[in-house]
Amino acid sequence: MHIHKYEKIWLIFGLTTLLVFLSVLGVSAFYLGNQPPSCLATINPEKVDTTKPFNKPGLKKVEGKDWDYELVFVASAFNYNPGEIEVPKGAKVKVIATTKDVIHGFEVAGTNINMMLEPGFISEFETTFDKAGEFLIVCNEYCGAGHHMMTSKIKVVEA
Amino acid sequence: MKRYGSLSAILYDEIVIIHFVIFTKGELREMPQPVIRKNTKAKTDDSSSLKGTLVSVFMVGLFLIATWVGVFYLFMDRF
Image (cartoon, rainbow over all chains, first blue to last red):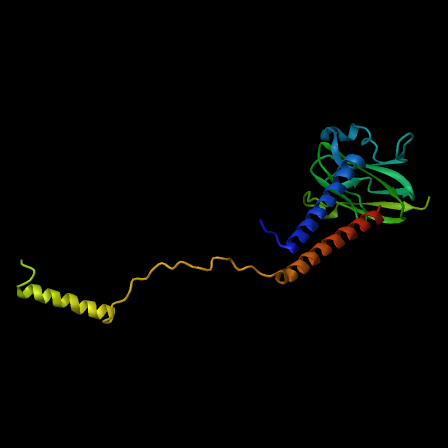
């Protein structure tokens, strides 16, 4: 079979980029241990209010873990609990969230925190809040008539 | 009916000849013959004709890589 010289060049180029892309994905998942925000952790959606840590939403300091704080959010139609929270700048935080009713979104605008909250599942995201300012949390999964008004706020303040 | 020797048979032959003259315009044409091509070698383009394609492919490829890199740095910059 005859393959044109230029054709060989762009076939190799395409295959190389594909391999690089798949390698990045594989290293990220299997070596660095990255996983989707909702990964196998489950909860009874009817007992969210009495299940730890969702019985006390908000920020709390933890000891002996890879992160300094746990920031717990409970979403329901059409609000987040807490509705506003302050986080000290530079804090290493694990955001833990779930929903009591339907699927909600959890996007902290302008950051990498962007999760889907599904009833029955716990979504988690670990990050370091290294920029001061106010960050709006919005629901980005259509959840009903009040979807567009469903917001919360994270204030990152100088420690 | 005898084919020859009767008036009707002669008239029939005349009609056949007249038809022949009308439909062939008086010429005896050859039947079309299947042509066997002697030059069976396919025409191939010379290498310079794929230059535009190569440039286009690399333009798309570099655009994709640039967007990947851009999104990656955006991801690294945010918390």
